[in-house]
Length: 505
Ligand SMILES: [Zn+2]
Image (cartoon, rainbow, N blue to C red):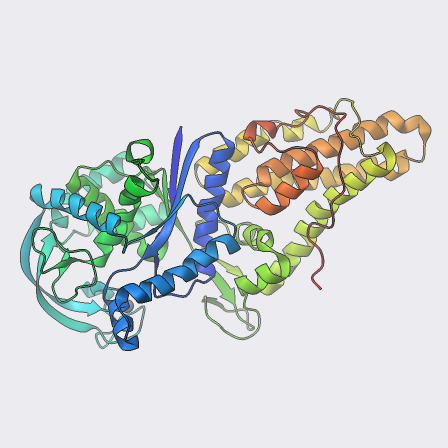
């Protein structure tokens, strides 16, 4: 089994923010989970470096576009260890190996008769690097996203015959209702296709910072075509001396934000069809994390006063796992939802520190105090078994559909079950009565097993914490099959852990 997951490549001029971290962590959760299943996994992220915006900023700063791209790509490279993601490769589209592969694929599109030369005239947003259709132009010929005046562009371009693919795309959407998830985004993409597809400009003649069109080197490819192809080209050179394309293509999952839906759900499959390359299996479109400002109004990533969650501050103060957990717990992946320092603080204290961290450190402390640090070698409590039966399967089934938040919720229900179990059994009371030693044994063994089981399943979400806790429980193996309640024999030694989610200093 092979599993291939991608993030969008991030535009190199942007500064990394919570949105980038969110998408990348989402992909990381899936990658880590599939590794736990023993599958061969490839996880790709990277930077999109061509196009007019990079060339313009470089010119203003008096450096070459490549120098600017090198400097800015580093900021995204630096983000990866901070959010603790396990990507297998980082692609940069200025890489000559990517460019060569783009040229090969696009030459096939050309040879297959899906391009022609024409005159393009239209309204163009240099920041979007996109020509706007009638419906996408705001008042006074401005960009509705950037609120800047659009340029009237008139130039000779190569065109891609997108219109040819209207029918094949309709068939794709009819045959594969899970090609795009969630359903609202599937419907949105399909509506765009049903609205009629126009041919699109494939090249630019005025720009030199890009991938040269091999059959007409006075042109470079329009940045979107070059960027989308990263998902395919990376496999051919990510591992030295090896071509991974046959192993990992088609991709299992492209993960992306809704602002780039049209490119991924319409242009991208059409390009692949034109080149005769198999289509990715699924695309998962996530929503935005909306910041609640002091008045409670939700705004997209704005720096309003008060309640704004700064991901870097959160990671510095509370650790990377806390951010990873919160983003996927608070907002259902796929939907928009509000995030704030208030709800972060609540979830950190009630859920991570109390329900999970305290449960674990109390259990380890009681095994230390009452049983000399050895998990009693007795059967687990039959009363808890039904609560844990099929848990790992449930989580795997949900993650097969990228239901990252729902899977986390299932795990957390068991964390809460274990908390109730501690209250029901009151091991500190059992410890006072020698006649209840057997009961105490069963209770401690069951708690150790319950915590171990949920922790194996929580590894994709909170990898640092899971590693610490599993080490304290004497387990190194992360395999999903070990997440079975009672699977690890009793009699093993445990060690103590410092508070897993301490109060910040
Ligand atoms: Zn724009």
